[in-house]
Image 1 (tube, rainbow, N blue to C red):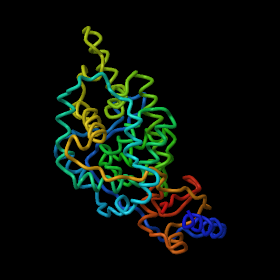
Image 2 (image 1 turned 180 degrees about the vertical axis):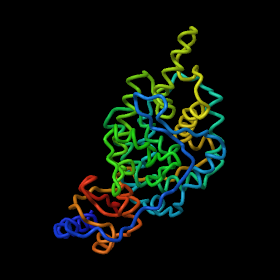
Image 3 (image 1 turned 90 degrees about the horizontal axis):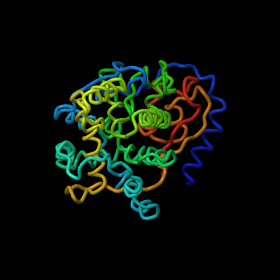
Image 4 (image 1 turned 90 degrees about the vertical axis):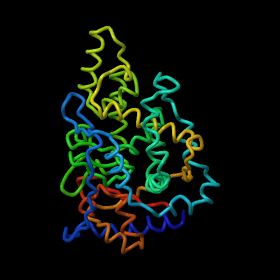
Length: 340
């Protein structure tokens, strides 16, 4: 990748003289506020999570988050797709969740129509997710967990790392501050690890894996990710006391959680067989779409954009964790760059 290597060389050589740059005017990422779509609760708490009813209105707000309309990220990459293949196919190959639900599940079917009736949403979602989803899929494969989990940011944030809920959940995976800290996501006035694509994905998979180990199924793990493990355990205990089944589909949970897991599984089924639902998923090249470049603390995105000619907006989309637009000691000593 000659362009990427050239950018890296420029950065590494130039950044050695920038660590003493004063923290003056900054370029902060705009905050997209939406109704809370998640929670990310602490493992020991049954109440430390945000809630939202995932009704038609909240789904419409999810769609409104997508500002990306530039399809060149996917449609302009036909040669790369021919060379590397389609990432959607790789994602499908790692599907491992069947959940034991019936072949036809009314709760899942009821969630599909919103997505299958919005091709424009799927186009814009693909354009945005194309920057990040290779990483979330590859990390799921590395951990040997279902690759469907890489689709969770679809219903959490529409794959927007800058998204923030009114309950202060943030990033692709919508961590609230306390749970983010529990899972090692540093947060300061200049850096928010919940918006860091690499760090938040690690934390989300750590959290989901811990919940899976606790409850024994991915459906219950997802329910606990939404409602809190204490709430799910309470529902299990109530069913067990009555001699009732304790799988996800048999539990009485908050309305938003009753919708949350079926909505996730609906998205996974649509991605598995889009033609069956009359929709189209634009191909995404099955290769890394961003590269991590080491830099010194003190470097600003504005300086990097000016020095390299890389679009400031694109730098910001990949480095939304830098809330001051500058690398500092609160976060990793690196920047992410789009690979051309």
